[in-house]
Image 1 (tube, helix red, strand yellow):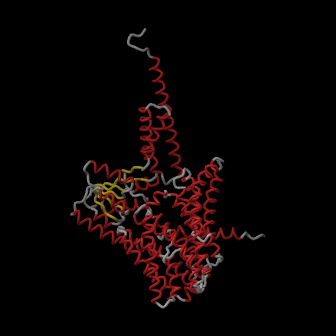
Image 2 (cartoon, rainbow, N blue to C red):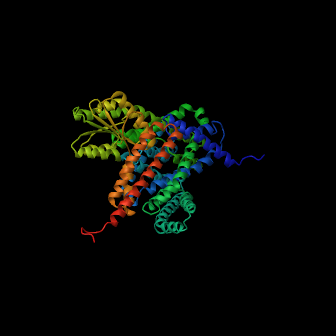
Image 3 (cartoon, rainbow, N blue to C red):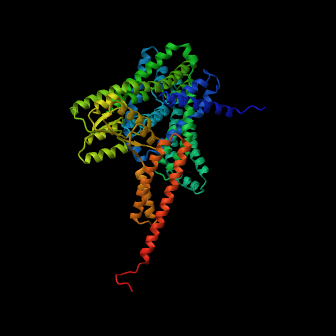
Length: 612
């Protein structure tokens, strides 16, 4: 019997580990990244030893970071990127330079030779783009001020990696003109490649994609999307530059093109899988042998560099005037080590600046910091932020002098804002609960009583006036959080009239289980209005289209009430739905027949009063 190919066996191992570890990690409230890292540790050389070629996998999986930066670039038009030039080169320079200088000074003070201290500090000053952007994406932080600031600094780090790598041969050489001229040649090559990508992207990419799109072969367009990113990444690596930076530039150049959405749709699945594989590879790369050999030294390095970076970055966040509630997450995401540090330390070993043992120790410290950061983030969420939020709530409550509003709105996104604006137009005050600091700042400027924090916390609801309010509108995005708020309100504030937003039918049923009768499906009314418009465009008179939509709405609401008692019995539910659909079709057909009959009768009547 033939053995399965290695690639098939490895695929089975990676996918099996991810499918088991990630849902378990998310169920425990630890997030997906911890699940991937734990899966990597479990199957790696220091776990079950199912996979041993860690470096090959890590190099391949880095392409997930490349695809992620390409998709980020697609969201940024060139003019928006130009608007971010100051935070990128201003605060980005400040972060990298300040962290490198302080880390280098600490290392030299500890007796480390200056060359090793400089290289180590430059590598440790860089942060994990993959983890930071993944966390910010999961938390919807990218549109916030801290998200934009963090993204700007991470982008600068990708740029800064180029001169850092160019500096290594100079530090490793005895100093001759050959090394200097070689560094200048590499720099010129890098500038030429970037210029070529920009010019070629402007002149060639759109016509090429247009030509491929004309073939009307979706799989070829997907292949072309991947080819574009792979080609640019290969070109950037050829000249020793960041592959992710090249992919980001390509994304920015295509951000205004008509193929932007198609590119996003094609590449997103590959990005998610490869990014997960990258985190698994990072977990596998943690050298527990080095950790076991020098656990004290490893702990000192990890804690020292994260503490130093954290202090510097927190100071920068204050200088940037970021909201206090966003500073802990912003600081932690940038305080960890980054995947590019692996490249820097390996290159430094090749340039004879670092000994292999020192390089392994530093790489292990970076990997451990990447493992610890998501865990510390969970602790910040559960311990630190609630206390900060409570202090902020108390201050706001003092300012409002206990003048609580009759309405509490939990969640002030696109749904909650409409409700708040309508109430405000009628002179009805509302207290807003949300965890987006930028949203809160905007709402506060329009005169709303705003409280930062998680509406599932009992102390926050009390401070916001739930004891005296009449109505609570549950308009949060997350389904589980919405249900948790409903349970909390039902248990502790039974006098509150609850009005809730349902994302879908399942959410609607679960809210009804809690005795909430005033539930609105978030897209139902808008969908009906669009359906009316479709009928009108097809030639139906406006009044008839409106009547049809009204009757459909009435029937749909009645059908939902019939479905609700059976929604846990799938067979019975399907039978009720089919019966309801058949009744609706028969009713509509009968009404159409009667309408056509009346129309014919009107057309057959003699015109005028006199007859013939």
